[in-house]
Amino acid sequence: MKNILKNFLIFFLILAIVSTILGFFSSRNDSTEEVSIAKVVQQVKDEQVKSITVNGNELLVTLDDDTQEKSKKELNQSLTDLLQNYEVPAEKIAAVDIVIGEDSDSNMFLTTILPFLIPGLFIIGLIWFMMRQVQGVNNRAMTFGQSGAKLADDKRKKVSFKDVAGAYEAKEDLTEIVEFLKHPQKFIAMGARIPKGVLLLGAPGTGKTLLARAVSGEAKVPFFHISGSEFVEMFVGVGASRVRDLFKKAKKASPCIIFVDEIDAVGRQRGAGLGGSHDEREQTLNQILVEMDGFDNQTNVIVLAATNRPDVLDPALLRPGRFDRQVVIDMPDIKDRLAILKIHAQKKPLEKDVDLQIVAQRTPGFSGADLANLLNEAAILAARENKKTIDNKTVLDSIERVLLGRERKSHILSDKEKKITAYHEAGHALVAHLLPNADPVHKVSIISRGRAAGYTINLPKEDKKMQGYSDFIDNMAVLLGGYAAEKTFFGEITTGASNDLQKVTNIARRMATQYGMNEKLGPRTFGKKEEMVFLGKEIHEQKDYSEKTAETIDEQMSIYVKNALDTATKTIADNKDKMEKIVAELIEKETIEKATFEKLLA
Figure 1 (tube, rainbow, N blue to C red):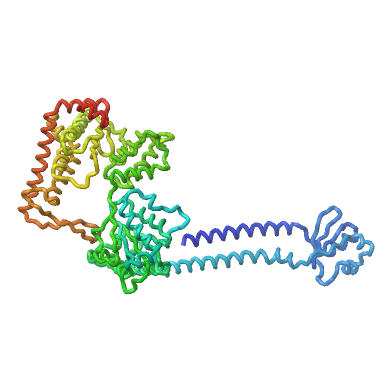
Figure 2 (tube, rainbow, N blue to C red; figure 1 turned 45 degrees about the vertical axis):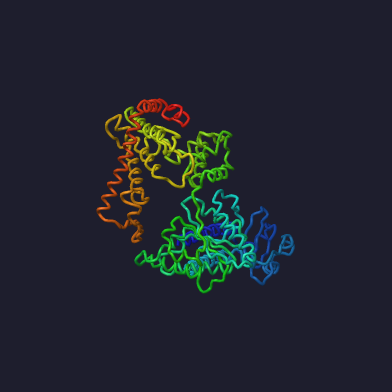
């Protein structure tokens, strides 16, 4: 409706401008005085006329003083006969320059018909355009059930497997898919069957969509991409209709690839909801199941899907014949992180002192998206400081900014709060340095970042795939190091340890209920989490143990926490002199790097 009103105003404005221009020319033509034919005859007799231009029945009279007049005569009578009938002498008629002009039909068209014709044409054009607009709305209503899948654009810059660092096994699996589409006879000769679907599984930011773009760049076949949320609408049956339309387009373009991003939006387990939109989602899922492995299953259409929630997908979607292959994309290790950093650093002016190996060591647990964001933050920080290049300090600062947030320079601690924070962070750092299974200290600071008044960065020497009982116990002691330091040196606890206590409680609960690390409880798990989808998302834990066992779990958790606290308290009490050194250095310089810290406690 807004577009129709806008177009109507534009047409009205153009019509007003054209009418103004035509009126201007008409007023110019009407400026000549119109006189009677008798007056013209008398002027000829008085020898006041220089020339007369005849246009049909109109006369344009030019006098000796170059003024002009208009007059009219009979249409079928010549000017000479008219003058002779008025008894004008022949010699005076000859003295007047009589010019026969063009036919007045064209003149009449311009002055009479055209001013009415142009507005009429504009009105007709406006009505036609409005009908087209209404017809377009009707067409969109008729195409409501068509899929919004987009065909990959050949003109944009292609992403290949070379642009994706790490994920070697995932790339190998996807390379087989691309090779099958390029050279199918090689596989068919061995009796191999093309996979119907490939499901990319991995945490957020690990590069699932990037791998799909790489498949699009490598495969020389049509590549349709759509999001799982684009299938489901508030109207029942629309999602299933869009699925049918998508596969219909894909079958016409086969062999081809369909990529469905965030398939968990439509592929959740059936029966989890009650009525409404969940029935619509289930109908959409049923249609996907039929299209992927129904009666008509001879088409060369491969479905590539990505999700970070494989636990909520329907089992029928994951069986062979639908998603034949599940490709797991892990978080990058230090080697992969270095390769990812090199790719994202290609177009950034890094100084020679920037060691990406150190950056990779300091970023365990970072995904590919996190690493890209890290270097982007470094570039933003360097540009804000009007630097021409990105130095090593800027890159390291961006790591802390991504982990903890930006420095809160306006958040100035009082002397008492600064001292408490120094002892708190020194407690974390000292316990981490002295316990054998704790991660080494890389940096200690009492500068506020994000919501933290201070922070201690502990990074492992190498990437860990598994953690043992001793690792958990020592890590819990490190987390309670700040709590123990406050209690030892000040005799009371502040709110600064609240986040540490949450982490310790979480570790203790997982050790007791998930990892089977408690001899009294035995090698089993306690509690089963289920996802209930009703008026939103709700995580419900099914209690599969008795109240007596719940008491035992609480007791064992308290034992874990108490042992960790005793370890942290004893470590700090036995090394008060080292604590004082760390605190003094922190109060003076506010930040201690790894080399300085190790030298301080050598």
